[in-house]
Image (cartoon, helix red, strand yellow):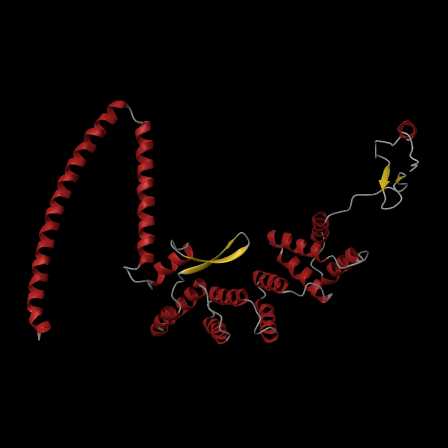
Length: 343
């Protein structure tokens, strides 16, 4: 059969004639049409302003104004006028900076303006407003906001709102309102934390209600478990060494038995820390001393060691005598109990 094929010389010549560009600097790869040239842009691009710089600009523009409501609201409206969407993130960051600088009046004004626009109606915004009203000594408005939130979001209101109101009333000595909020917590099956239990217990103690004080601490003992976040997951962990909050609770109320594991761990940690501190101080003093002083200290230390050894020997002998007596007593009691078991 006759086969028509191109000779290898012709194929080599065609490949030499076609020059494929190696640089892809001014070209763009297309799906079906290969490479095409890319022309430079005629317009100029400007860097976008981030939310942090916008929030700083908003804070600086508000600080220069007076406390007149219309003036502040007008400045905020003019700031948002050219935005296509409400800059919620910028306003939230501005509120955080104002809160860190303790500009409570500005925090109240910006939060109320944001809520009047129908934006940012979250529990975090309401808690920020509640905290700012309390810090600005506007307790009546804070109570109005609290009652409104409690009536509207009764079953979904976070625990920290109850804790905040109880701490507010505790600082001002308003015990009856504290008890009302605590009763609401128990009705809604919200378990109070240690700080709330200690505040309510202090109120019972001041009023002389010792029976309720004991019932409270019997009902809500210090927790033995806590939740920690390990790699973004919430994990339940047993508390081996209690936190400072639990320790202050135990010292105040003495609700834990003296021979419990919690008190043992706490005391052992205290003893070890004290021993380590003493050793470090002794080492520092020895480093700063002269060799003659060090030799004198060594002699004293040896005499102390010998006295400690003698004391240990005496204690060991006494312990052996006591153990022998206990064994005799146990044997006598066992002999006296044998006839009862035989019958």
